[in-house]
Image (cartoon, rainbow, N blue to C red; front, side, top):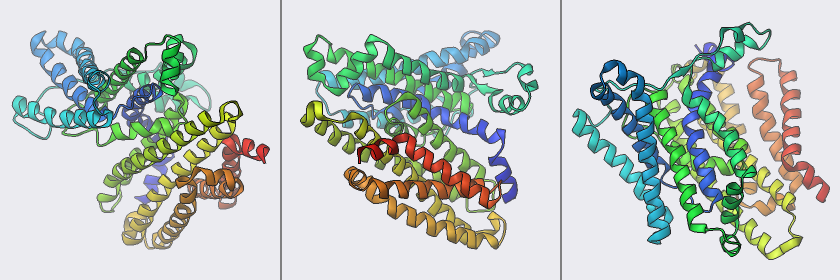
Length: 460
């Protein structure tokens, strides 16, 4: 059984699943990125996603009665998409009004949106179906799935693998990954994107050159709600074909942290979202083992808690760097501090992996049969010990960004060692140990060097 799970992780089907489950994280992450760039954090993503997911299911189900079965099946998913996203945008408009016009606290207003989305969907669902858990009694529809041309399957070497990964993916998955490049162009190649970033970096300076700060922030929150709505629609009409109570399971909160983990860039945000999607898909895959179901079920919640912790740390780091930029003026070395931030993000990601490694190691020791037999006890103990050690040595560089500046060599050693060990463990499932060690540590050193190590070495 364990060997089958390992084989599955290295398959096209697993990558297919990663893209599918990363979609409801990536879409709201794009919205979180845009609102954060404008200086207004959309804490209400979770409630917006739930409201959109529920609205899409209900509208698509009842459209078959409103327009007749055949017409309803054709237009129902799109009508559900439009109205679901519309509801999410209305909630984002309410959040903007309470914060920008009524001067309400942005965080508290966002939490209120989340509570409203969670409770209102259950109340209305009970009125419509008599069920407080899900909408299984409604004949809800799904968004279309994209079928690739069969000729792609005939391309030598990569054709079959690519065909199995991308064929029959929901249109929402395609929209999610295409939107990364649209948002990137929008942010860095259009006047409005420049205004949005200027408002987020220094609203007073932006206002002094004629930029309407309030309007830009209104627009950024509306766009954020739009992406949150798309993510909710995928949950109920792409990922599943019904609405379940609180089905987002913290994905809206994870979406808050992925822009920080991605270095504030759409492509980096996509990578961070895919990493969380990988752990989500891994939890689903581990569910087939003879282990306590609480392990795979807990992985998304561990990821959510860690995401919130990382988000808080990154906000604190960003604020300190912004203060330094203001104080230093032209003497501020932007490239140096961007490198420091990127390396701190890598430390945080490795801590996430370490925590999951601790949980996995404990599970392997306590339930070895589910992982292939008694040999798993030793492997689990080693994974547990290594994860605890790597967690402890990474923590100082996460809690204090200036420690990376003062002890960049030690930070580099910790990063390369941590990433190298985990890559080696992953590669050793398929390759010889010596080859895995060489590839794992060389790749880790290159990653550290490319994301900022070269800048720190030059500054010495």
